[in-house]
Amino acid sequence: MLQCVLLSVAFGETVALDSVDLNVPDGEVVAVMGPSGCGKTTLLRAVAGLQPLDGGTITWDGRNLKAVPPHERGFGFMFQDYALFPHLSVGGNVAFGLRMQGVDGRRREDRVRNVLDTVGLAGYEHRPIHELSGGEQQRVALARTLAPSPRLILLDEPIGALDRALREDLTAEMHSIFAKLEVTALYVTHDRDEAFAMADTVVVMDRGSVVRQGAPQDLWDDPRHEFVARMLGFGSPHPAVVTNGLADFGWATTEVALPDGTQLVVVPPQAIRIVADGPLRGLVTKSAFASGRYTTEFEIGTATLSATSPHRFAPGDPISFRIEPQQILAVDD
Image 1 (cartoon, rainbow, N blue to C red):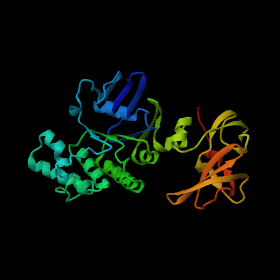
Image 2: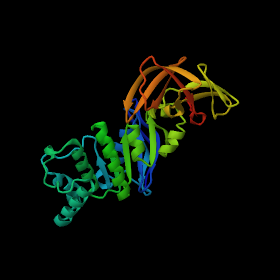
Image 3: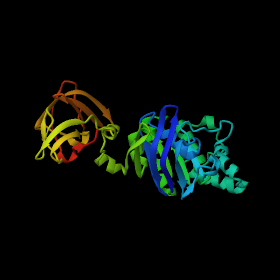
Image 4: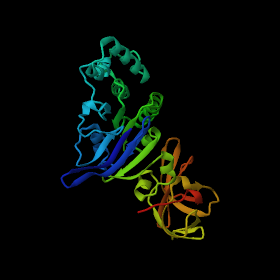
């Protein structure tokens, strides 16, 4: 089990990690997500031993790793650009870590074949790297990382350079492979869907700090913070005065399942039902198609909301809807 306690890293006056706590239990995948510059890659590099700490401790099964060099930590690192060796074949790349471990020729060849089969590249041992597609190169990089059987895999946006459809396919395949092999992994990404699809636990970072962490469903049901709600695509929060189960937003009044008082409230897309006879009315500003549905953005009073629908609306179209009370969430600013 990986344990990070109060990790701190600064580059001059810029704080990259600010007292970060993080655990990665054996056999689980923890995804760290956040915008560029939030500290997630610095965290990964610190765990790998590539970035010195200004404070805090990193331990594996209780052993402090401060004096352990990167190559002795038993961790595998998969980079965003794959870092494959162009002069080596697929098999040569996958065998690299095994050679460093001193694994003999026959066992090394067997292991290369097995791991290539695991990632869907059976028979690719002699292929040159330059003949592979981006997705195939990603699989080779994954196979090379898995081959030495590392006790922890560190992945730095490993499929971020691929197109959306291929990313979705490879995310599903990697999740299946990790589950089958009971891989322990720390996975860095800026993509919400990727993090939620891959991870047992999602950690959201902002400006060097952990803002929220928990199971994907827990974060979805209770983002708790405005920043997390925005990262999940819930849109901007709205101030509301809640009295006896009714929230007055100024632009509308609707039922909610929130305590009385002034609240900062998120109305996520899944809370909105577009219906012909809805009690609320808005005006469409834009509509975009993705993943088989339209995301429609519309204005009501001073607020901008969005909802998903199988139907396309044009800018300027009127729209009627209702808000599901149980889906409205209160957050901290």
